Image: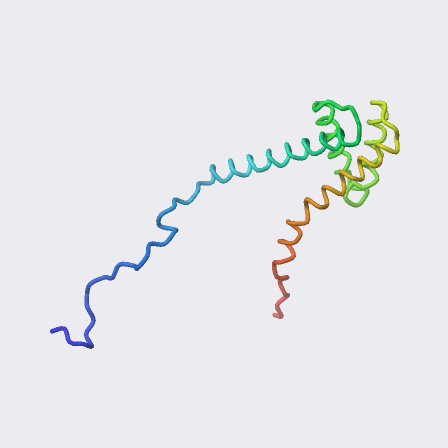
Length: 140
């Protein structure tokens, strides 16, 4: 009957259950909700950073004014006539903060510092992007 070389008909149970079996897969709605929360978190943290920069440089702006300034800065930086919005953003910030009584030098330093913080905040994503291999064209 069952010699040493014969196979048993019993199914063997896996030694350890896999993680995929224990955790349910997120639905598309859950993924979209996670994306919305992350997006809102990023936008709120940028506004908070802008507000902190305003107070660190002695600019007396309320949180509502800083939020409006952030919206204008992002809108102006999206105009596709400069690289990364540099120059246009500074012009907008100098003119807007000039209306609040800030000197043009302070406003320019503020805008450049905020632009540099945006670059530093983008570096982790750039490092991840650069870690992916470049697809080579195939001959054929």
